[in-house]
Image (cartoon, rainbow, N blue to C red; front, side, top):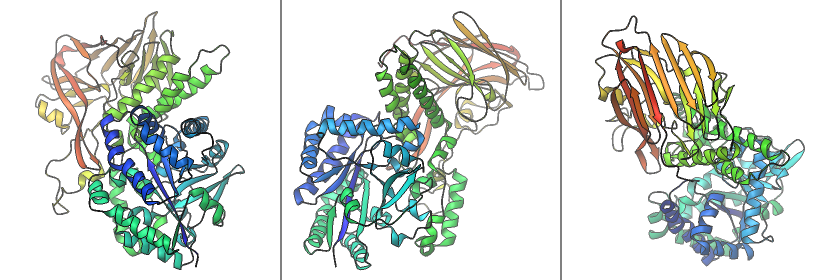
Amino acid sequence: MEPIRLAFGVHDHQPVGNFDHIVEQHVREAYRPLLEALAARGFTPFTLHLSGPLLEWLEAHDRPFLDFVGRLATDGKIELLLSGYDEPILAALPRADRVEQVLRMREALHRRFGAGVRVEGLWLTERVWEPDLATDLVEAGVRYCLVDDRHFLVSAIPKERLHAPWWTEAGGRRIALLPIDEQLRYQVPFKPPAQVLGYLQQLRSAGHRLAVLADDGEKFGGWPGTRAWVYERGWLAEFLDVMLGAMDRGEVRLVTCSGALAEVASGGLAYVPAVSYREMEKWALPPEAVHRLEALERDLGEARLAGPDAGLVRGAHWRNFLVRYPEANRMHKKMLALSALHRTRAGQPGAPDLSEARRAIGRAQCNDVYWHGVFGGLYLPWLRSAVWQNLARAERLLRAGEPLAVEVTDVDCDGRDEILLHSAAVSAVIAPARGGAVEEYTLFGPLTNYASALTRRHEAYHDEPPHGQPHGEAPREPAPVDAEDRALFVDRVLAADVSRETYASGRYAPLRTWARTPLRYRVETGPDAAQVVLEGDGLEKRVRLAADGALTVSYRWDGAGLPSDARFAPEISLAAPLQLETDPAAEWWRFTIETVAKSERGLERTPQGESWTPLWPLASGAARVELRLPSRTSPQ
């Protein structure tokens, strides 16, 4: 009986905007010790993917590690994988951007490790697949792509047939798909090495010729508790002893993914639907749907879910994160708009060099901040800030020298028009359907979107009992939840008995809110400023934006039918500090916007910005708020 071929792969990535000390810790405690151990013990060849952001960090901070990787690649001991350079979800990009991202990765690998290094396979970020990807990947020179075995199970292809390469096509452009074995992905490095080998032996006895394992390098020392388990308590050393012994006995043989493609016969033709891995599809659901899916899984039982019906039980596709989180959608649609603007501007005769803008757009495509699961992702403000900085940097270059302009367009693609105002200094979005809330306020000097504070939302894991607490009991301190999405100038009337503490908790009901009220609007333009006048439901709201970015909002309101002691209270949720001035003087309520989100370390509280709310007596009838421009212009 011939040995079973094992294609062993590691994916190492750190997102744009992550802190240096976090990246350094992962290199020191996970990436380096794993590669050094595999190479020293002769557990080669294997497959390695380093993302573009991590490559750039290593080039700046740890060139010896890249030199080590280069020697392994030159000696044929590892096979390097492509991806989108900035680790984007390729399915979420325009088609030209997909190709460009992959080509940039190929160029970077050849530049660093030599043109002779073979790179023909692709690590598909978060394994988010859509059928039309095949055409673009082939155009970028990709021969094969790693996906999960689940991608085939949802098409009712039996698991027993997935230990082989498969092929798919779009428009006649053909690409190979290598299914990653989910059972191996769960076993390594969390199960005893003898159990891992036992599974491989079962596959071999059943006549299978290939097993593919490729997963995050952070599992080998970066996740909480894994460093002690993998290295200090000896899991990796035992794993290598067990596997090398099996290799000596002719039971297992290591191959690269390209080797597997060359040596193992095709499983056939498969058309894989829009799909990702199982956990991702569950995370993309709203909380109530997560609970229904989990109830369905309990009703079916472990035995049935371990069988062929498992692939038919699904959550939502990755793009649903853009519905669940409007903050992610606004970043995404801004990125798409700037990418299209760049291609238009760069394609004009005599256009200036806009390559720096292109790179900034590419960095803003890094995937982590557009979704949320077990890891922080969207909930990490420094990652969102990095994306908005790159978007602002790109837009500043693309709009250099432009006067103030106004566009009425459906910015977020939800079927309702927004008002987009932009100049060489600022970009802002006003949403008439949300009572004239300012959903974006990006100043190009400080490269900051001051309207990007995150809304406090209910998540499915908020319903889980604390560690050690019986199921069925609510958490002792419920996570605060906002009834309405955050932005700048979300307008309400509050009753006199609403306290600052109750207001900050989100557990109050306004007497009136315009947060979801569509208002009539008109735009008045002048030589140095534009004013959007919004009216409806007893409110007149004038949002004035100057070409230099100065923003003023003026109000008139009708308090008829409301208690005389009520207060008019527009909430301004700031992602970064700004000076606010009011006329007339107002009482101010201020609190930190803090979310409770799940990470690999458990539930964490994270400041997302500051809520500022001026309060005026309802009888005042009119007021004005001015956002003063910051004096500093860094970061650059």
